[in-house]
Length: 369
Image (cartoon, rainbow, N blue to C red; front, side, top):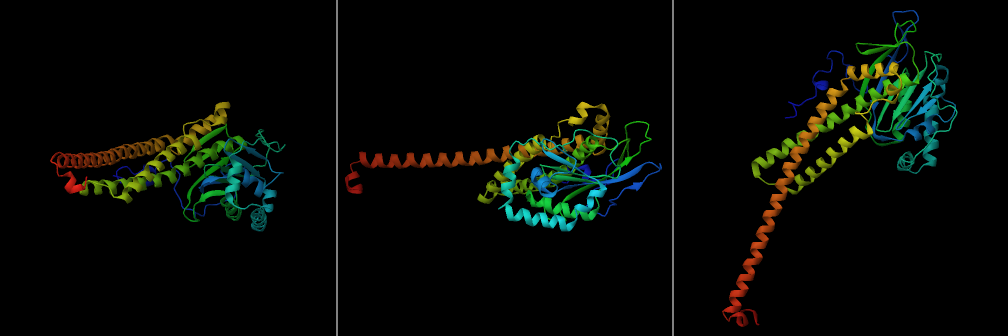
């Protein structure tokens, strides 16, 4: 069954208009490269799914502090890293800040509790002004609370250093080398006749600002999260296949299989909640609502990454699991009902025997009444 429902994303990773799926050890270029136009530049984008939950405020305070252009969203933070500032974020600096954080914080759970509180940024650097005059060689880091982070034009050494800090501020991080990774390309050309243009495995922009970065990063963050959920759901389908074979062979459940069933039901509900509320796959980007310029990028990226098709495919699998779970739960209910009926029959039989013995006058001899 899982082989028949396998996502087209995994069965055809190099399909038309789809970014190539890669592992965490990918070696894509991470510096700006000239494009065809003398004024245009291309920037690599890399998104990684790191953990079940990330403390975005903790990441920003641990790594950056004040002095960086940034923007906090409902569940994310975008930080602009000018090229001249990147030297500040090297491995030694990150290691020193990790040591400082570990000396002040008892556990990562404390940071996660802080992230659940309502927090309103008051820093004057909190920017809602996407200036087209920013340096075209700037780099960006975008971190999402649901577990993804996106690097735009960040060199690999800085990526590795930042990943260590992000994982230290996360819940249930994924082991290095097993993360889901997406790669993409942004081409910035001031002479572009329109604000944006979608191409194969890339998007061309007239200007690169925080709002464009937010739109692109949100789609790529959702994409790698979907990859993660695809693997989980396929494993759940494999488990149901095993349960089906057991019921077909024996007609009953063992205690271990009951526990597996209840865990799958809970995990299925958690994934549904995560897809709709945390990832916001059914919601339009705030920037896309406000400006048609960013809406075209948002629509083009969703089409490029087949977000709707992949969500529909995943929803179909989750509904299939839900229907199977109902079937198995009904079997368990019938088993309990049958057991209860036999217990009642046994009690009635015992009462009848006692009544017969008592009425026959042998109750005193048998029971000493």
